[in-house]
Image 1 (cartoon, helix red, strand yellow):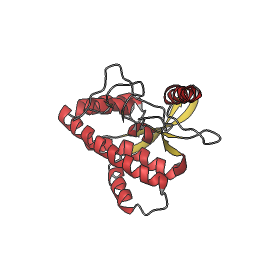
Image 2 (image 1 turned 135 degrees about the vertical axis):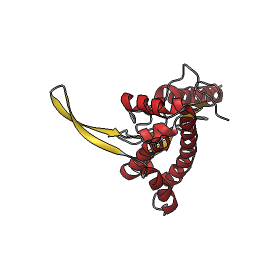
Image 3 (image 1 turned 30 degrees about the vertical axis):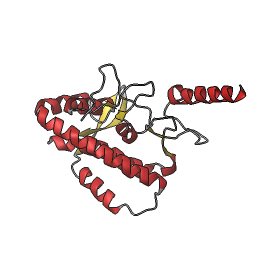
Image 4 (image 1 turned 45 degrees about the vertical axis):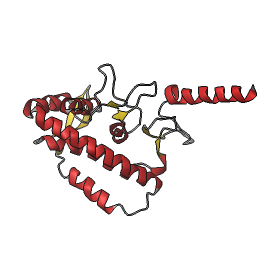
Amino acid sequence: MVTEKSAAMKPLFLAGHPALDFLNTAFTPPTGGGPVEMIGDGQSFVAWLLEASLLNAGSASKVKRRFGANALDEVAGDARKFRQWASGWLERWRHAPDRNYAPELQRLNRLLEHGNSYREVVAVEARWKLVEHCRIDAARELLALPASQVALLITSEQPELVKRCAGADCILWFVDRTKAHRRMFCSAALCGNRAKVAAFRERAREGS
């Protein structure tokens, strides 16, 4: 059963990498409440790809016009399955990066085969900028977008810096880009602060 997102709930972009932001589209808010699913249907999947800058506004509009709700809902279901699989694989990979992951790479590469993109040089405020566009000829090709980010993650990031939040009951992912690589929490303002409050209360109980 898919848990629909609250109308007021916004996607979380705190991981420092789109692949991990994709994994973070299913979570339980640290402030309380039930599980949240940000890609519960096709429309929300396209909306997330747009907010994550994996689709531009023009492409997102074309996708919604070209493919029916059923096709987009089906690919959103496939995206949720891919997310669950990728989460399990990346959990193993970050702890044992030197293992042979041939079956996992084969599955990932099958999704990457559906990607169809091209680059264009455009003028932006008197400067030239290289912009990448994607062609979506079938709804299933949308899966290549998060798959490409997972491919970038495993080929460009250090496994030991791909972490999960140390907060109680928090499962969110992030890349630790701090200088000393001691980041422990998805958000210092949320899980980090809750951990400090819990530690303070524990010390107060021990002191009394």
